[in-house]
Length: 192
Image (cartoon, rainbow, N blue to C red; front, side, top):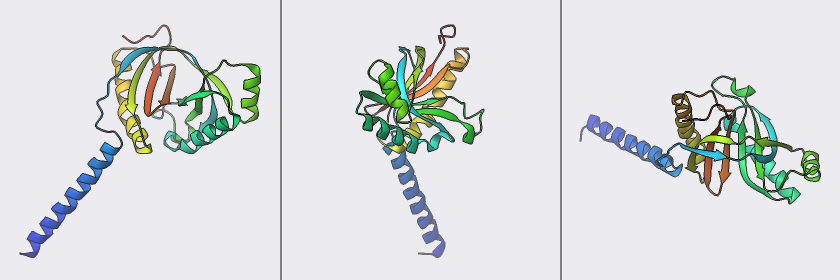
């Protein structure tokens, strides 16, 4: 076999292996899921978590720290959440702000709020209202990244085509292997 032909076969084999690895990673991250935007009503939810400033893709340590603090308090808490206050396309990544933690299962009483504050956590209320939501099965960190890359463009297109103002809240809820990417709208800007 000539050297040129061996070289072409070698390049083809490497390209095939790289393609298989990329497709395998994409599948591992749930990239082949069919996604749709649903319009739903969401309730206000009391949350507790840690504030964070920086690139959103580096938030995992903050979320893990918030979960550890909440676990140490032994109080009833539910699914995790990430609440994003800034649009990363309009704000420098190192200045993007968010709140990361868990949705609380019980009512917001003063003793519980004091214990949460003493532990260094902040409580707040996720707004309720009409929301656009994309559900994405996320079982690993790669799936969280792929989910965001796929869900946010769908949500942005959906609210822009509905000719509404920007959402009043953008958050992710992590519940039993599914991430719910959510845009909540104020009462006077409900999506069609």
